[in-house]
Image (tube, rainbow, N blue to C red; front, side, top):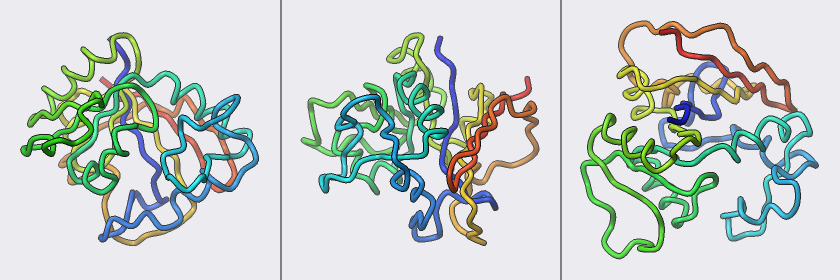
Amino acid sequence: MGTVIMHNVVSVDGFIADGNDDVGPLHDWYFSGDTPITEGDDQQYDHSGAGSRFRVSKASAQYVRPMWESIGTIVMGRNLFDLVNGWEGRPPAGDHVVVVSHRPKPEGWHPEASYHFVDDVRAAIDKAQELAGERTIAVNAGEVGGQILAAGLVDEVAMDVVPVVFGSGKRYFGSIDGQLLLEDPHVVIQGDRVLHLRFKVRR
């Protein structure tokens, strides 16, 4: 089965957005470099409709590119799905998306897209593993990600840490209760205005 990685861009004080779901400068590094995330034309990752492309520092590209290419399935919560309208059926990485939600997929919404709605975090990971095979499952951080981590279903935690302090907002680990130990980081890469970290979850 594929590795389950909980991942998000995060402020140094642990927030993935403010209280209004505004990410502020957290994603600026995606557009401030001179290296496209893909080797050639990175149109496949351009879902803005405005022609803006992901261009990052060389160090970040060497980290992000293979990570994104390894992803088979993304697991996200309903709040993020609604905020981005499911990336209009074209996820930024991977071929499939599993949405944890007590509400069904909106009627008529992009029937061609491989998006699957389930109401339980364990069912979400089971479905994601089925779809991804040996490829990576990327779990978006936040409330749903924290629940999946607390259930013991996450193998690694990946954080793109941006040097900004939010003070309050949506927490990377959601409202997780209690302590969980991670191993020492096995990936530490400094980009421009971002620090990429990856930790294995201690079993």
